[in-house]
Length: 412
Image (cartoon, rainbow, N blue to C red; front, side, top):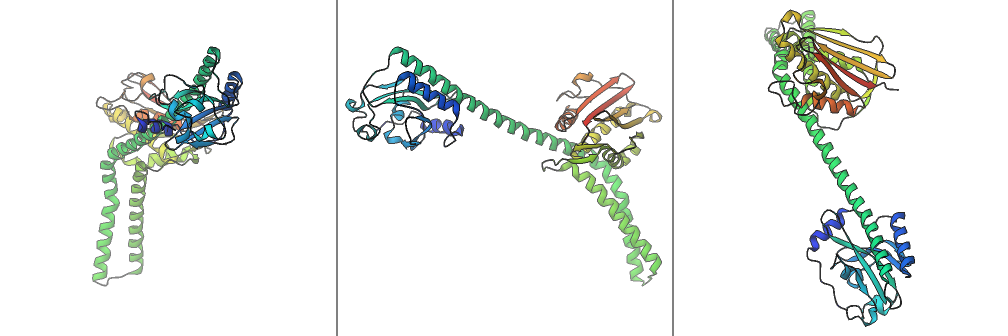
C-alpha cells in the first residue's frame, strides 16, 4: 500500500479544518441528504462526507457504512485531497498499485470502486475532505453521474462555507463586543479623568474636616481634656466627614469598573437624583442652575445603574461645557422624567448655543460637538442606551440650546 504524501501546506490545512469546529459533531440532516442522493444517483452502496485530520478520516455523514472514522493511513480520501481541483477516480482498487493491499480493499468493506470530489474551505482554499461514493465492484461513473457527484459536492462545500462564515461572524461579533466594552471602559476613564480634578476639590472639604477634628481630639487626649458631650459630638462629626469622603470616592470609582454590566430593575428618578448629587460641585463651579421636574411616581427600567449614570454624567458635562459660552445668569439645565404609554422618557435640556454638528450625526463616532473632541462620548452614550433596548435623540436650535431625549421600555 503506497502511503500518500502530505499536502503541500499540511499545517494550514489542519488549521482550516479545526477552525470549522466540525469534527466529532452530531449528524446533521443537510449533510445526510447529500450522501443519500449521491449513493442513489451514482448507484453505489456507500457514500460519505469524509474529513481528514492528522490521524484519521472522520465521517460527518455516512450512508451504507456503520463506522464513524477510519485511520488516515488507509483512507482513499487522503490521496484525493492531494488534487483539490479535480476528483479522484479509482475504477478497480484491487488492481491499482496504490490501493491493492489496502485493508479496506483486502477486507471489509471490500472496496473496488471509489470516486471522491475534494471539499475546499472558502477563506484559504484548503482541501479538508471529500464527498465520495464507494462500490464493491469495479466500474466507472457516467459523465452525468460524475457531474451530479460534483454538484452535490459543491452543495456540501457550501454548507461548510456557511459554517465557516458563521464562525467568522461570531468571532467578529465577540471582537466587536470586546471593543465596545473597551470603548465603554475608556469612556468611563475619560469621564473620571475630567471629574478627578474637580472631585479632588470637593473631597478636600471632608478631608480637611477629618484632619482638623483628629487634631482637636489629639490635643484633648494630650491634655486629658475629655468631656463626654464634646467628645461625642466631635467623633460624630468625624464619622460624618469620613462617610462623605467615602461616598464621593464610591461614586467616582463606579465609572472605572471593567466587570461586565449587571442589569436590574432601577428607578430612573433615583439614578437622575444621585447623578445630580454627584455633580453638585460641578454645578456650583460652572454656575449652572439645575431644575428637576421628575415624575412623582417611581419609573422602573431594567438597566445597569452605573452605565446609565455614565450617560447622564456625559450629557451633563457636555451641557456645562456648552453653557460656558453663555452668561452665568442664563445658564440653566432642566432634567425631567415621565411615563409615555409603555416608555420611560428622560429629557435633559440646556440653555447653551446648540450643537455644532447636525442632530442626525451627533451620535456618530468621531463626529464631535467640541472643537477639540474625538466624538466618542455621545457615540458611547448611544450604544449604552441601545444595549438597554432604548433610544436617544437630540434636537437643537442655534442659540436656543439642545434637548437630549432618552426613551426606555418600562420594566414590568
